[in-house]
Image 1: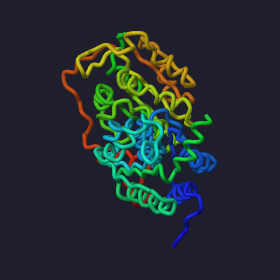
Image 2: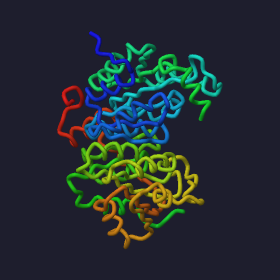
Image 3: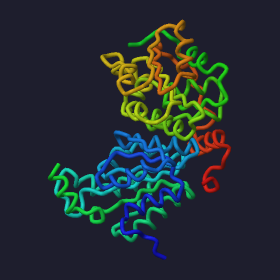
Image 4: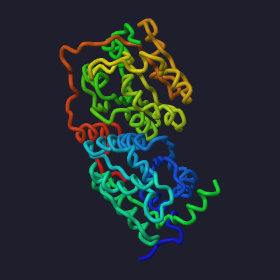
Length: 179
Length: 201
């Protein structure tokens, strides 16, 4: 079975749509830009901008309490902002899914990104979050699907880390420099 | 600055004749105790931690339940930890969010240190500048009717700051349970009439 499209970003959007995700919150990252646009264009999804990632933890907890499914899009630096708030979905067994675009690994050129990038999986696991990772475009669809199922059917908190190798360090770097 | 309103009287008035479709989220500490004291209700979600997250939780509920009203009851210390939540609420497409801040100007759980509302910070002003439709600061019980009207009926997001006195709790009335997953599932079932997880996609 191979339903993967050429663009793994469309695969993520597809999974969110099929899995009935109705609230999408984000702190922006270039790695999520196309996905955010797709979600905004979908009238079954409410897209909510938050200005710090911990607010996304509260928001998704509220979404579930109100009967909807949500996901948060963020970059790895933001994982550090979520730590204390993650106690809530943990102790309340509230399904929580976040899709994290990685910085601070594969070919990173900003040293300030490296410590949080390196610590990201450990920090999440320390707070009880199950961590999945996608390194290659062809594994994105199944990884996001597994994360959503485990979260909402298994009442777990799950993070999918999208490797910097997958997102493409080179292009990202070139884009950064032209900003 | 600390006010003179009595928080127990205030919240009792706000929640008197409570509408069926009112969903209440309480910030950790005194706000949770004050609301619990009025009697248990499965449409209350009482927080015991995640300081600063009461507003985002209420906002997520409001987006999911646009036909119902989400009322967040919290304190100045809790809200000051999550001022960003006001910006999220001020910009989100939800018109059914209301926030009551019981502002005593102090961190009463941790030894009574003054908060920034005893200094230069004005929470109603912050909310207004974050895009809230209506904000109000009250200092007297005579203003309660207008405060209640805003909180329950006015198009949101709205925020009311009530300047309350410090309260000494002789006996803290806890919510029915501190078990988070029970209280969360109970709230969700009361709001949606659906089960906890797998069957409700």
